[in-house]
Image (cartoon, rainbow, N blue to C red; front, side, top):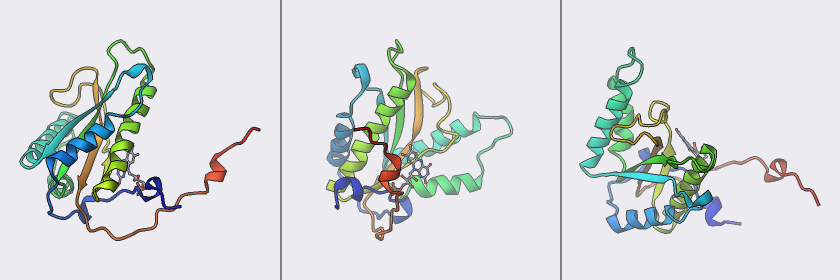
Length: 186
Ligand SMILES: Cc1cc2nc3c(=O)[nH]c(=O)nc-3n(C[C@H](O)[C@H](O)[C@H](O)COP(=O)(O)O)c2cc1C
């Protein structure tokens, strides 16, 4: 079986090309994300889209978040190189957020799961438009509510989804047998 689910894979920015992605394509991917399920229809996924010169702004925000952490922590050249090589190689970087239901009508895990469903929709959508991408979740970004500059107290970053056109080789994506992860009762 070669389904869209089995073709989905992580494609890292080192394989991205310079070919630009139409804004309409990004909009269609975000619309696919928005079709995700959520308990009580809280629709807790939020995205901040960084493209073009906006990618410099993402770098600035990452530095700000990092430097606002523990006082012995300072953004250095190594981190600058590591993150700029991802951000600037990407056509688009999407910062993924959990927007916690203000009334907390459902447990947090359900809303995190719903954001995961939204990201998976987007990820599967890449297949149709021949784009690649991956979900990156650096610890310093995925911390507390309100930690992201300008984020509300009920908003929490769940990572960055990098995407772009790519020239990645086919790579094996081994999985343990599904049979070992399933218990049947019948
Ligand atoms: C919630 C989530 C967070 C992830 N964070 C990272 C990450 O920080 N760094 C990374 O290299 N991959 C990350 N990944 C991607 C996984 O490494 C990748 O999905 C896994 O290796 C399987 O490869 P595949 O996506 O090609 O099937 C993340 C995936 C998920 C679902």
